[in-house]
Length: 67
Length: 375
Length: 166
Image 1 (spheres, rainbow over the protein chains, first blue to last red):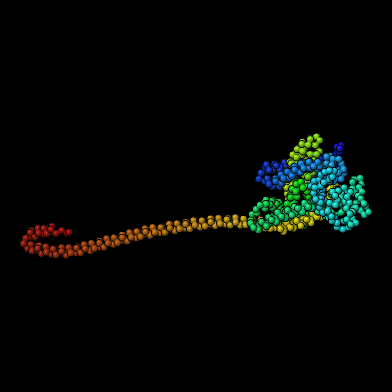
Image 2 (image 1 turned 135 degrees about the vertical axis):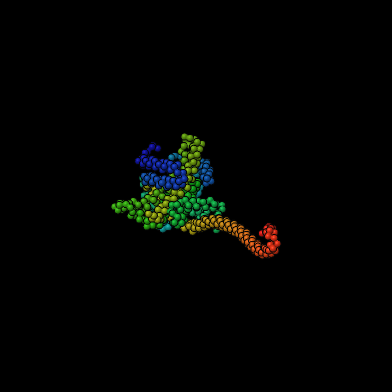
């Protein structure tokens, strides 16, 4: 089986890069927020999970549209 | 953790059992039976076909298959097929297909000819005696029928439904006798309280949350238990079926659309506080968001997470076969076991997380719809 | 996307919709409703018990405060009574003293009065006696005159010398 690179695969890679950057931003900022205000950990975590889930939905949507 | 350990143990036992049977065999293609290796899956293509077959819904409950004395043996039981065809409702057991999945086996019911291709039941056009395929392996002289069968997924749904009814109605009965439940109810009560106090109450608001707790609790436990069931070697992939997640997402859509108040619709259709010319544009965007994007993201997220989890676990198990040449039997099996063990642990977390996120987002959307104007 | 749509099974969707509706209905009726009711009942019970305990505590405090107040009042009353008693005592003593003083003064005054009257009486008697004596003396003198002038004079002197006014 010779390696085949299609536009779909490149697109999927781009999506994963974008989603990765986004998730990193969310996680990093949430960590900063928690470090700054440990008493707000629960609220920050909830908001972080929701936003990460939205981003994930977006990324999956794009991946499946391209598939 | 018990469940993980159990499923890991089960997986290990099963893997060893399968290895000794010389076959982690699929019954997707009959041509395997005629091959010399007795239906073993060795190549990447075969592994991929097997995984894709597993991801799909199935008409029989097949735990494993093997070949002995040149004959294909299937361990499992058939499930009833109920289809709505041009000749009316037809019911029969899936065993009549004899594990064929490629359209060769044709079942005649009255004047209707039915066959199964890649997990879907097709009705042959009038006059056709056998299925013809085009170059893309699409049937040219057969069409799909409305399939109301008790498939593996429907069985999973029924199983989990009965399980939930049994657990929670016995918990409800316990409260009649005493204030604090005992036994398994002591495990369930904090979960119920968690969903009510951490998901429903803060997201919907003190005033309205009572109306929606029933739905949120049902959906949460339904998804969670089905996700966990998918991690067992029984091979369920219910929450990885688009139809199931679409149904769940549409329930949420209907609930928050039906319970939306004036404030909510006002913000969608005629957004206050922006220039009048922009308002129709915003209304289109908001409508698309509320009616399409929100449920779509809900259904795709659950489906994709669970499917991806199943594909990853099965691919890691398949390392056992694909890397057997380069690592040897022991090396490939060890690597596969270690990797699939850790990924299964993550999948247990994902099983909970996806149930939590689905319920959480549902609660959030409902909360947006019933929120009172406060400015 | 095509493959996904091909995988989508409308039949499964229909069956799942019916089953989920049924499940939600049954769960709400037989599980969630009674569970939620008993949970909120229990929570209300706990809240009620806590409130009752809080109330009891407050009542206890009130009771204690009342007791303290009563005690304070009683103490104040006792103090007042003691003070009154002391005042009465002092007043009585003072009254008695005054009366006694008065009595004494009266007695002294009476005594003085009687002394004065005695003295008056004595003086009056003395005067009458002196008059009598004077008369006698005069008589004697007059009698002596008759004998000797010198003798008379010396007699008078002698007499006067004898008579002293108390």
